Length: 324
Image (spheres, rainbow, N blue to C red):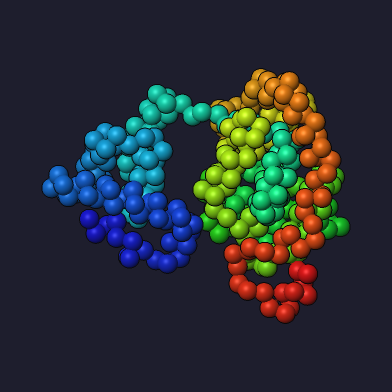
């Protein structure tokens, strides 16, 4: 169907999503188009296309996530269809009820520092700092991985905190740019590491310098050292859970973490699991190793450790003077 042809999209429209997201959209839509061709179908209206899309989900046994990507891809390639596929939206809601989202295993700050030291030991210094920043601020994985040097405003006399501008290029989950903060007094060691990371990153370049799949694989491998199953959302869950354990008001935590609804916010809080994991660490004598990692964190980030990988333009002489 010509309506889904990516070559007809305005480049500025294409640039509103990351290249990896664009690729997922394209593959998902191609699967739907092949299904239509195989069934000799040519929907002539949004309502008819909506019915075929639901049938495609059933025939192809798409998961909720796969169907969401297919729907998002269709609406991306044909923006006029946005808001005109109610049946598909209803099916997604039904899938959410039948297969509720599994909450992420909460990663508390102490465990995050342990994982960060292991990342640093493997040369993943940038990703290690970004993981700590994600846990401290409750960033979504895509937001953390999307941070670039110019998205982080340094503390000043006017605003004595780091200001993180989220979704400046491709938007956030809510579809617009958002802002969150990191107070250096919250974690002085992380503040120092973030300062050094920013100095070593050319403007317009990524702080983490890696993608979601790489982050997921590294996290899965290293979390096995603790006998747990951390995922890219574990830092966000740990941020919320740890704040509740400190006694912070739930409404404040929800606002700081930018959860749109209370229901989605509560999915990320798992106090019982967090306490159970801490007890398990103590029983296996891992608490000592975790405490040592937190105390000796800076030793894993020697001078020049951030000067390697950074996906941006090559540094020029002026860059070296600025970033050092």
